[in-house]
Image 1 (spheres, rainbow, N blue to C red):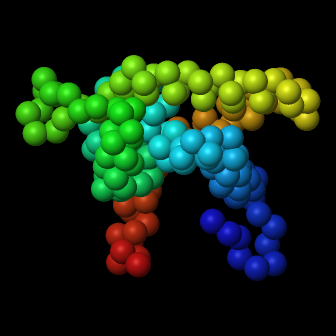
Image 2 (tube, rainbow, N blue to C red):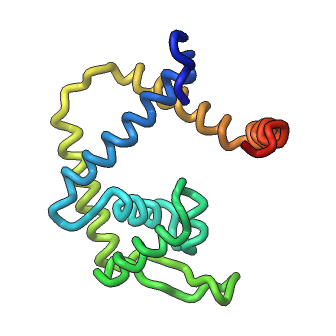
Length: 165
């Protein structure tokens, strides 16, 4: 979301631009840290999501990310080939299997977390903890606004007025 030429960005536009830039930098950092093990940021995200949220279906994982279910399925299949995740029966849906971490996958998540924690502990804080907590609150509020029914209603109203263009 870029402001029109000649207009400075609004505070929200500035936060969004920095968030996108940080997201891309964090993807690169994840691959710098774990890339030699063949671990991309996407695969790391799937593993960490399963570690935090427990077994999930591929469609559930796809809905939690701004990517297609097919892309998530590709990543999950690659992780399964490496023995990091496995497919198990889903008691609430016969056709949609659950994906869960294997012991090997859990071990990899634990080692990635330790590696990341050790690296972050070596970084001199550029900003104080108080500012980081404040930034986290702001980002959470912005995310929750975009996840709200009110936002969805506004988007539907705007796109229906413009004929979906």
